[in-house]
Length: 217
Image 1 (cartoon, rainbow, N blue to C red):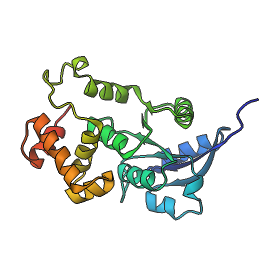
Image 2 (image 1 turned 90 degrees about the vertical axis):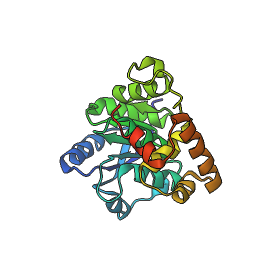
Image 3 (image 1 turned 90 degrees about the horizontal axis):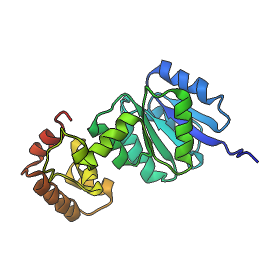
């Protein structure tokens, strides 16, 4: 017997032509029920739908007011059951890791054909994690520096997932106190991770950290 479950999906995208295209597509897909669309997070929250019943949020990153990564942080901490997939033009390392650290289950580029995206979202709902090929290569190269000749050979800067999360939050301008709150750890633990990060990267300040991780890949 075929699976008749319909996954409830909401979409946040600020460009109306893209939003309309996604709306038209997902309204005609048997496996999904489109419950809300919005151009920013405030508009999404103002609509009469219940977050508790939502299965999947497809979200752009470059949004007005609260960006997609901030939305992911908020949603995953309040409604952990909601799967979040970023749908964006950003294919750089910083945006990818910030999104994954925020709790996104997928990271798809806007060049992804809609039928392919549909299948990838089904994969997410079955417990998988999905990425566009370009994004997957970025992640693989980061954790396997031997596969990327552009990376430093020594790569003492191999950070743990928690350290990557701390770096991502610092990049967004958060204070140590706010980092502790968002990562659900103590201030002392944040300082411990920062000392380890500085040691691995052979740097001595937050300014050096920003310069190092804002450089081109």
